[in-house]
Length: 197
Image (tube, rainbow, N blue to C red; front, side, top):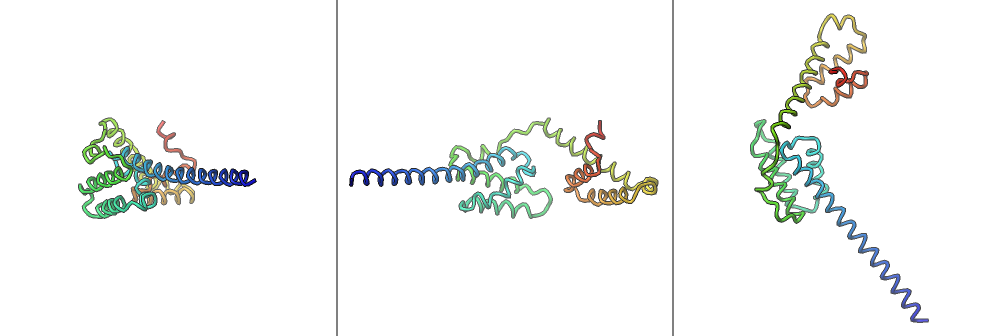
């Protein structure tokens, strides 16, 4: 009888122990994968650190790397540098690369150093494409602004159209509000992409 009880207790303890080890391993793996995902995003976007994906990843650092003081310190130094004037601050890039280097250390990617992080691929074709898209958006916004400010159209337009034109005019003054303009245009049934075809 004692042997049966001993076998049952041993089986229960070993089952619980295996479950606890599995849970701890999965939790550790999930934390590592979260850190790696942020690092991969920042590395893949380092040619243009102001992309939406990059900004989201940067804003996640304090949460995901909360126990990694060197990464958080490098992130703070990066943020401090971005808040300085003039508009183009060459030190921002260096602080960004330093942040990536600290992240690679935490992730134990020992063969990734400053020299590897500093080099990236940014073809001229991609640069031209991004510049053309920016120019196209500006042209569309200027066109919308001009048509919103025409007196002959304002006299013939309904109050709703005048109100939407005023909103568009105010949003154009803030260059960060392009997404808002696109949403507003879609809300009123005007798809900007369809108007170019």
